[in-house]
Image (tube, rainbow, N blue to C red):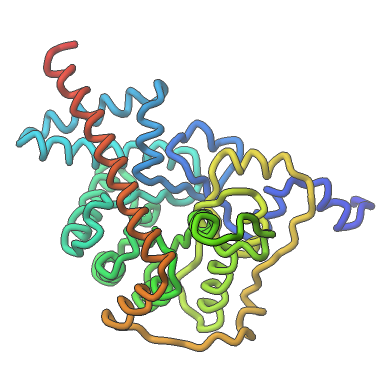
Length: 338
């Protein structure tokens, strides 16, 4: 038996291993070769991360296989590209699932963010591709933008199809309340992008971790969910520094980039639990209910959230278009036998 006190043992442990005692650690990347050493439970991807990975020489085989699949499917060029994109996103997910024991999050095209029926259709298509590859839908989270339409798509996927959803691009308390009422599996409130907005739009340029507006936002959402017993879990996302991560120790899950996971693995400072489900039950938040009208109004009252949701959708859409352009160039080379 070790004679060292718990406090001394904790100081010898890395911040990452301490964090894992309170929180499920998730790797936020499409570069599945970068995650093995950190032993995350789950992994998340998005169009920007897949684009970055698809440019790497190590992943050209996956891209080429997806193109072969799409060409074999036939149809118009637009239909072939849609098949290739779906296959590519799922292919990255399948490789990630070889490295993590839990789940992978695969994102529905951000260009569908305001079309509930198209989001449903795309989500079920992605799940079908996973199932064709022998992966149960229990190991997949479908990522949807947290627009009203996205939240309602998530509600239907959960209720009617048993598909678990990860609601992303979440910046406002209204979005979080609507997701809880829709009974989705998980939300991804963004921390770093909230901080970015405050730095760009206010006179204040630096924050201590506990004052960071992104940390404050996620803490409020976590406390609200735990106080009122919602089953939806909170996964903080989009971190700019390890201080933000450590300030949310105790959150249900945190999805963290490989570079910050590396920093946390080298950091040996003490990481106390900051969020507590039991303490949350004593907070002074009051329960609210939102229909479509009240959701749109309350979300619209939050200028930061309106701007960051719009900006996030545009950026993910732009990266999807860049990926499609890359695919078109490769398709042309394939057709020309190069």
